[in-house]
Image: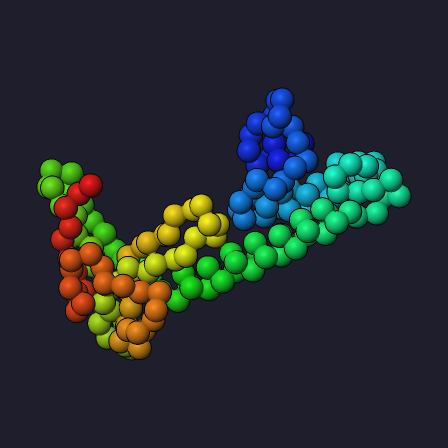
Amino acid sequence: ASAAFITGRFEGDGLTSDLSDLDHNGIIGVADWWKFYNKHKKYRRVGKLIERFYDEAGQPTLIRRQYEERVQASKDMRKKRNEIVRRYVDCNSKGVMAEPFYTIWCDVHVTEGLRYMRTLVIEPLTPDAEVERKCVCITRSQWNDPNLEPYGDCGLEATTCRRPRG
């Protein structure tokens, strides 16, 4: 039933220990769920389910070892993504409901001066997920980062830009 804690499907075929369809976030979610219950004082372990993850001797199966490898790979991917995101400051934005546009800008950095707007392109954690894009502010020293591309039609030297809503 482990998958049900991630998918929310607590009936029928949703009650399964098959985690092969879960994406990286789902795999980490199951690992976090297991960690919570494994260390909780109220919920104590009463045994091992002899099925997909443990054999008749109570030993981890190949599927269990593969799951643990997926957990580690998922955590590594999430860590790499977060390291990329932490390099940058998010753009500021402001919109007035009555106007058909919103304003995006980058604050001036105290020691490095102007910050320029770019789109941070973040590769998806799973093959079927979409590429994530977000507006970030960069300094000249970050100019050639391969994860960056121009922000819309605002121009390479833009520190502020007005964009249409929607």
